Amino acid sequence: MDIYYRENPTLNVEDFIEILDKSTLGQRRPLQDVAAMQLMLENANVYVGAYAGEKLVGLARGMTDFVFTTYLADLAVDEVFQHQGIGKELVIRVKKMHPRAKLILLAAPAAQAYYPKIGMQKHDFCFFIDDVNEIH
Image (cartoon, rainbow, N blue to C red; front, side, top):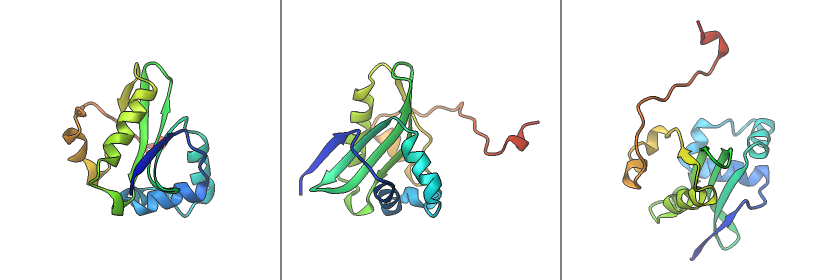
């Protein structure tokens, strides 16, 4: 089946939860918290969907300032459709939407080896914090 792509497709929270669940990202997202998932969906401003017919089989979701940085929050491809170049094409299309902006992401543990294979560079200076009480 041919795969086609849509920039900023109309998505509902059920579609969003389903594609994350069918990829390895579902293990690290609050899929049971529909209100949180709805906020995640509403507050991003970059989307590219991959479709087999009308079925969503891949999704790139991110946030951008349109010039300097695009943060790719989710790159999800249904496990049945992985290893067909869909993830790479989603990354390419997100980058082309805002070519001046540097594309940045935090790799899921299962995907750490994937990103260098498609040409992304590893950066050693990433920092994060989950809880404000961890700041000292």
